[in-house]
Length: 306
Image 1: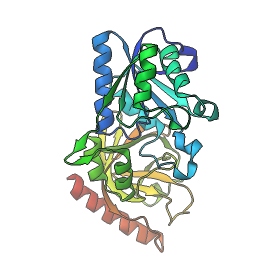
Image 2: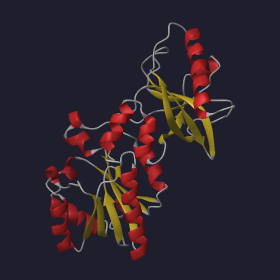
Image 3: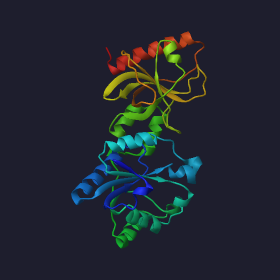
Image 4: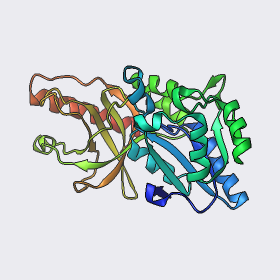
């Protein structure tokens, strides 16, 4: 997959495209992306995903901006697995937000050579969200752009939505989240240098800096660290480490049952399987060590580590 820049535009090859925030890549997103990829293959066009950074509400209505299911790095990583040809990330600023529906469709057809647009049923576009599906079809007819609408995907009677997933993450219900995603909830990042307290007390960790405004409930989880092609069982803490300083926010993972040297700045994925407990401040390091041992025992049982 190629991440396009302004230097790549206008594209030479015609595209089948989709537009959205794609935060979290749930089952509904995967269904749309599969349609885009298949349509592109059948018509000899390139598949293209268009997304925004930051979320439009972060600029236009910051007090109502949603928390993030994943960060941009994880989003790109998940897209790679969908066998999409191109990703174009719109830098959502004041200037872009003022594009009228007509200008937005022109942008799609002229700059991104989009010949077929596949979107969800509730997609809106253009200044003030004035454009809806009907607008897109009317404007697309004049511009040679076909618009296909995908109905919502349901699990039982409930619609799969980012809103639902965000709520579950705030409650730490990662097992339920995985049902809506169609995979385990994960965050990708690069390992960062920590203060090595974990190593000093006998529980070394790898650390990644979490995406800003992450929806995930703070606390301790069982899960896995993926480094290269190896999936390693782990106890994971997401939070501010109140026993240490309570200021820096980290995702820390202690790998269970195996000593693995993972260098700083190495790409890893952290998979969250089950919420174990709230993050809390301990009276001293000995109490912290005792709790970490209990967390490891719980995680080993849940992950069936022998």
